[in-house]
Length: 96
Image 1 (tube, rainbow, N blue to C red):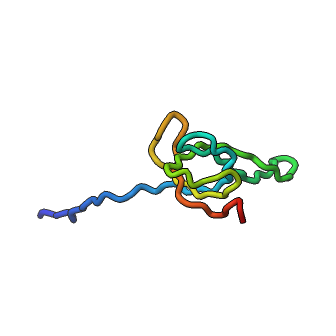
Image 2: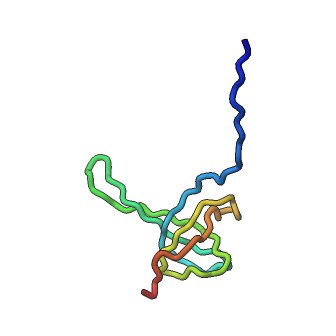
Image 3: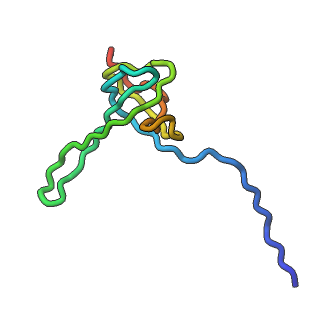
């Protein structure tokens, strides 16, 4: 008795990449902006919420992001020692 297993074909799909939003705090470097991502965390003992911030360097090839803008970024391969994200779009401009 022979059993044949169904053949599986693997297709190359794009890996799931994190998408985040943050506020641009510095745009002084060439093709790079620094963003700040804030999140609220509840203190385990006292129950009070406080803000925890993280700064990330983002690759902005065309220089579209400006200080104060809220931008959307996506995780990507390492582009330099500290850059692991790339610019996608501006969610909210600082001019408005």
